[in-house]
Amino acid sequence: MKIAVFALTRGYPEDKSKYDSLIERNYSIYKHINCKRENPTDMILFHEGNISTEDQEYISSKYEYQIIFRDVSEYFKKVDFRLEGEEKFNLGYRYMCRFNMYHIWDEISDYDYALRVDEDIKISKFDPYIFEHMKEKNIEYMVGRFTKDIHRATNDTLPHFLLNNTNLDVKKIYNHRNPYTNLYATSVNFWKKKENNELLKKIALTEKQLIHRWGDHTVQGIVLNNKNEKIHLFPKLEYSHISHNFMIKNNLFRNLTINSKLNPISIKEGLYTKLKLKIKGKLSSKNIYSFEVN
Image 1 (cartoon, rainbow, N blue to C red):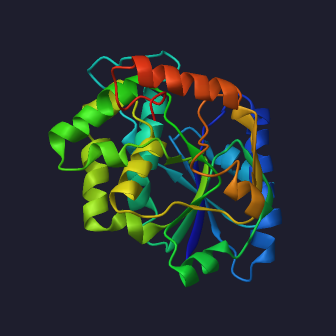
Image 2 (image 1 turned 90 degrees about the vertical axis):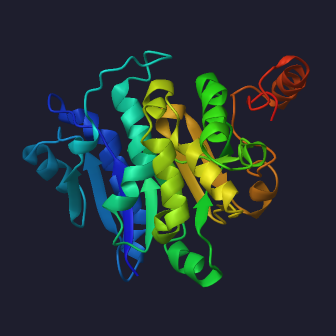
């Protein structure tokens, strides 16, 4: 069984200290996964051509095994159309979403299973043989939490793109029960199947994906829901998502309650505020695909 642990990461040619969180991430993978496995996973770091050989050697020197660095700058090109929405979602961010929803499956096509662990993730609990468990139980996808898509431009445009360009049951599959994709495990073959890959391609490679900033978590949710593929929760997992200042914990009790698909991550406010927004959305929202309604 070939397993890849991967991330699309940024280069910091002027300041090596900015690699600290990535180095912590790598060590947590070594400590909780690779040092406990008889056959360690491959560690792959994709980058936009901005991690120099010197920086690659520096990052590798802090990790016990080999790190595979892959330059994927071919997927990050200038465009001649205007992007819409918030400036914080620049072209690089939107290409990152495209890479993680589509191009990644070509890049790791020779692997059986993959674990995405973003550069700002620090794992503190993990079952190192979860991939063998997935194979035994025929599980295609596993994640720590569900999440809604609170990006209004996506909810205003992606469902209508699907309605106009596919025969999908959009109301059924666009349900805001998406995987929280900063850390997930999956069978690579699921995404390489012809029907799934063609749907990913249709969504990912349209200019609209860049213009409106469609995210990979929602697109993965659409594909999984379309195939009625259950999104499983990790039975044992704990990690911190540093950029979101958020801790994910998975065990039997939490998976039946806090982590269930009935309580997807949406906003940081409490349950009362979430319920109030949902009621208000159902009464006033004109978009049946908005996160307040679902």
